[in-house]
Length: 359
Image (cartoon, rainbow, N blue to C red):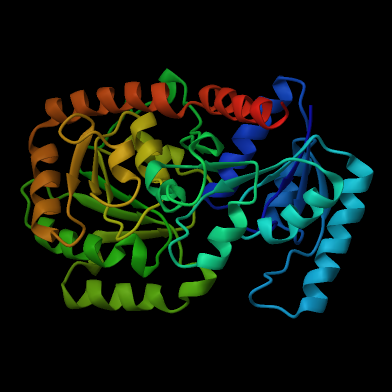
């Protein structure tokens, strides 16, 4: 089998890129040829090349934001690539790239699979285009909900994102009972402001917990980190919060943490929650988006309304005060994560979709 993957980022590594890489590793073990088309060079495309994955740079423009001439140029460039690679399937790693992939696939009579990484509620035009694909994979039931009334059920698939499974000896043997983690982009929808408020309510806890933020502000939220630090200073918690910035290996922090907080205001899937569970950590997360599909409330952690700072604080305090209960939730979380989010399971489910569209 020969697959072209088209992804919107070559110089960024977010959850969609991590999931794509894990999928391709599994597919290659199944003797599937993969080629990745990216709009630019950078850290992600370099990572793919280091793994021996064939990559091609091709401009990918947004039809709704660019002129028709620029759009048609992107379509023509992709047409040349497809003619050369001769794929069996074109797999779009986001709805955005489907704008150029679906017309090219139609010209060659090649089936298209579109992978939804975010919900489509903001764009009716984009949603209408996605329904032209032979199959759509949503990374959660929440993400795929917008397609229920506009696409046949047999063409819609929910396949949760894959998460790399750490070895048992990588789990937190040296867990710091006091370390409370936030992992993610520093932008408004990730709920970093709520984490700062939670910190202000935890600062007088007898254990004197350590609070750490892993992540940096993305290009679309420049200046927000300054706002967050200013708020932390106003609440008197700036000295007790460590802003670690972007880290290449968050695993070592997962290994030492006692609890992970995911206070997002919206979340298509909930990758950080799933990663934390893989490391045997209890998670306190917002009851929004795909997070209820990841975290089993009162079993692998707790779900709280996103604006309920007191509720978040209460659950974190409970886990700090009850380390044995926290460990039990962590073990349950790892079992659930391995069962639902292993790369092997993910690849097997995607392969079934490929087989269906090739019939």
